[in-house]
Every structure is written in C-alpha cells, then in structure tokens.
Image (cartoon, rainbow, N blue to C red; front, side, top):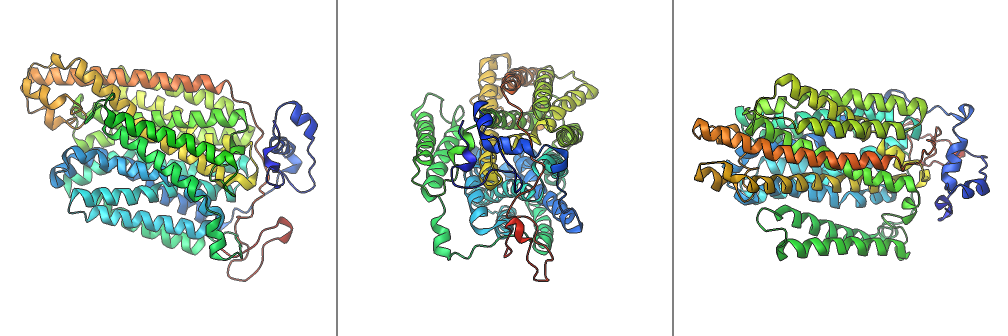
Length: 579
C-alpha cells in the first residue's frame, strides 16, 4: 500500500531526523506511518512525557466526566417502569433510550472535526455543558416529549464526552502508553455502566426517578470547574472564524447524521410496532444504508477539503478488522447490559434495586481485565494476543450466560459475569490504540472520532438485535403460558417492558412458573446468538497484523507549558499556545 500519512503533505509519525525505508515498507504492504512507528520501537528512542500534578488532575477529571456518560447509558434500564408510570409514555418509552443513543452516535464525527478546528479545550467544556443541560431538562420533565428531548440533548453530550476524552488522552500520552491511562478512565466508565441499573433502581424505588438525572448536575459542575482550571492544551489558529467554519465537512456530516438517524429510527420500531417486512421498517432502513453509501462516496470524492472520515484511515488491513471488531464488541457489551437485568427481574424475580447490584461482578471484573490489557500492551506493545484472549473469554461468557434459569445460584451467575467482564475489559481498552497505530499523529482526532462512531453505532445494534431475537422467541413459545391475559401482555414485543418481578408475581404460582420459564428460554436463545457474534470477532482477530505502537509523542495539542506565565512551548516541536 502507498503511504497514506504523506497524502496531505504531512510527515509520517516519528521523531525528527528519523528515516524510513520506504522501499522495504512498500514491499511488505505496510504504510510509511507504520514503518516510522517501527523505528521508534528502539528503547533508546523512547521519550518521557509530562506526568506532573496537572497531568494527573486532568486524567482524574476525565474519569469524573466519563462517569456522567456511563451512568446515563444504563441508568434507565431499572428506573424505566417508574418513569413509564409517571409520564405515561406507553409505546414511546423506547425513545428514552433511543433518542440518547441516536444523538450520541450521529454527532460523534462532527465533534472530532470541531476538536481539530477550534481546539480541544473549549469543545470539551461545551460538550460537558450540553450534557449537564440535558440532565437538567430530563430531571425537570413534565411530559414524555420533554423527557425525550432532554435525553436527546444528553446523548449529544455523552457521545462528545466519550470521544473527546479519547482524543485528549491521545494528545497527552504516547501511543504505547495510552492504554495505562485510559485504563484508569475506563475503570470509572465501567463502574458507571455497571452500577447505572443499581442507581436507577435504588433512586427510583426510594425517592423519585428525577434524581436519576439530577445527580448529574453536581458531577457535571465538578467536571467543568476542574477541567476549566487545569485543561490548558496547546492550540493556535489565527484564521478568521469564517475560514474555520468553511473547514467543517458540513455535507459529509449531514449525510452521515441523516443516514444514521434513518437506520436507528427503523430499528426503534422494527419487530415491535411494525413487522420487519413492513414498509415502515424497510424504507427508513434502506434509506439509511443508502445514506451511508453516499457518505462513503462523498468522503472518497475529494470534494470536501477536510473530510470528516478521510479514506486513508481505512488503507490498512488491521484498521478495517479493528473497526469491525469494535462494532462487534460494542454489540455484545450492550447485549449483556440490557438483557442481564431482564434475567434478574423476570426469571430470578429480583427487585429493581437488587437486580442493579447483582450486576456488580461485571463492574468489578472489568477493571482487572482492563488493567491486565493495559499493562501488557505497554510492556510488550502487542495487541493481537490481547484481542484474541479477550474475545475468546467474551464468547465463553456468553455461552455460560445462556445456561441461566430460575435455579441458577448466586455463585454461578457471578462467575458467568466475571468471565465475560474480563473478556470485554481486556478488549475495550486496546481496540483504539490498534486503530490509531497505522495512521499518523496528525490524523489522531479523525481516527478517534471514526472509531468512536463505529462503537456508538454498535451500541444501538447491541440493543436492537437481541431485542428482535428475544421478541421472536417469546412469540414462538408464548403458548406455553396458560393465562390468556399474560399472553396478551407478553406477546407482540411486550415481554421486554413487562420484565419485572412485580409483573410476574401478580399471577398464580403455576402461571408464574410458566412465565419465568418463558423468559429463561428466550434469554437462552439471546445469549447463544450473542456468543456467535463474539465468536466471529475472535476469528477476525487472526487476520490482524501487529503494528508497532509509537513510544514518542508528537502532537500540536499537548499540555501547555508554564500556564499563566505566558511562556511558549518548545518551538522545536512546532507547538503553539493559544487554547
């Protein structure tokens, strides 16, 4: 392959004065950026980077900020019934989650481009403000429409938070070391994802569901103050505002947003309100995929001066495999997050609060998984063995989850969660460095936003696909429930909304047994198909090629030196101040 790092005239990643044997690199099909990265594998080339008080304050501040985004991914899974009862959303309840995910996904690439054009600091602070505003709207919602609008605003902020956190860590740490520091942040993120259902259930059960959203206000305030004081990164662009705005790939972003929204709108009602073969489902779905095709063609056409997703990001085999596996990993992650609570509440008959803290083994095990992966990646610089082990454990974990029924003991389901959490934890922290490795440092924001979009896009399918499997299986075996009223409530996509101990326990004991068996049988199918998805990802890892991870940090967006003293950063590195 030709060197994509040189397409736009930028130098490939590597230190000043480094030489790259382009002929040998081309012969092996490795981009020049990869060859340059190989040069910095030598120990004597390793360069220390600033890790003082301000650095660690920013890392902790980013962790606090991700707690906002992570809680809101799952907090409504157990608080949902209380919200549904209070605001009478009925069939529109699905939009509490989907409005969040749609906006989180659709705006991610745009934020990546804004980070390049306007700098990291102010974009980040604006995104946290947007999320905090959305939380306030949700907490004060008096109608279902107001709540859904607030969730959409939250989604915009959440997608931006996850993206900009990854971009900022990429600016602060060399590629080889990024996993260590992202592990700290992702540990907090993982805890938030896992305890979200517990928080939602506990708060809604003992207080009011509004505090599920109001709790974000003080967290958002702490994040804004901390990052305003300490997040001073280098950026300087004297171009007028009009010229900066013209750099935004407006056409590409609009096509991508329209296509994404069409697909996710179709998935919202597919298999529940409308059949999969209904025109209500097929038309927006096909238009959405057509939109994604038009987006790809537009990005490759060269019309946009700065494409939001440059085609050079996809010029490496490993990059393509990593993106596919990022999608699959996100799918199976949300597969578990949304359907494990269904097991605990409808089969084990736990209360929403107990169902929430029953997910804690997943949170606890995910942290050592991420730590093991981060330390291994930093020490040996090899991501392929980590991906293989992680996806294999994820596959095994999903197979084990498929064995759960009403008689599964606490130690059993705890071990099942630990296995899958270790696998997901090992993979989630190492996919982005693997995608960033083949591209130059100048493309890190674009690479990160592309990766972030794929991950967010996978989250929607991680809810939609198992929901289809679950509902279809419920309808197939619905006759096993003898009570006609129960069948009427559970059929046609109603089983997911009715998944609670309160619903099951309103029926006579014999019908309760039938309903619990119905749910267990459907979840058995759900988790087995999830294992197939994870197994495909495991096989795809074999196609990856190890790309050396750079030990040097070369970026124009690093930490500003001597903040408040007017000192300029090292001119030899080409870094300007101003952000």
